[in-house]
Length: 274
Image (cartoon, rainbow, N blue to C red; front, side, top):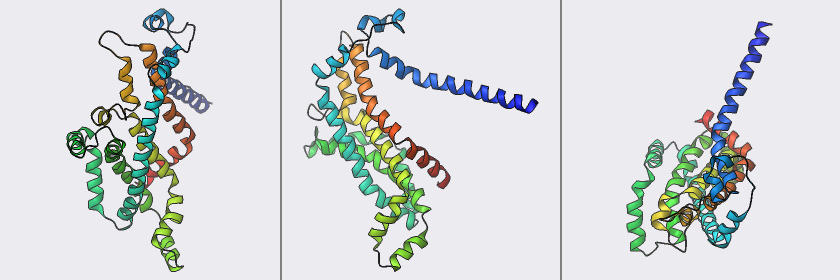
């Protein structure tokens, strides 16, 4: 009887702690979402925190006056190309490092992963300015790959290390090439890790502000940089700013929800295998 009461008490305790954590982490997003449907006066007034008449003028302003579709397109192109480029180079590289035990390359990747991205900024700017690639997609895609590529490799190495070598050797004996074995046997088994690493690399590129501030221009300005359009020296369009923030967050949130099963299995498998 005491044990049953203790278990119920523990469940209630864990439920309360979980609810508090959920509220703490979700409140900023919920406030941002609700503020996107308020007027400037309602946002700045504490009396309209929960009671207000929602309207869509902020979203109309974002798309009509600030041409946000162009910024969405820029962010999408940069994030997709940098993620695909990182996967194209990172997966074979991670497989080679894992299969041939290149520990010195693993250390190099770790160093590249932990170095702050701002240290690459000045060399990138000098290089792309010399070859006239400032305000171009290649400059932003390559700069984002500097962070995404080491991350994908570091996540995928443990997956490839645990794949049985005997399975690959049997396929080689049956006449399969190493490339075909890698594509048809190794990659399908590593889907959780691929989805997890590519999604996190996509999120980094989608949210990146630092590289875009220096390397982009009017032709390639992405969403995080476009938020500055709502901030001037005299005022801040809080409603439009909150609407723009919701637009930036929504695609990443939907992708995370749709691929949640793969992310959980990928992170848990990486934790066990690493």
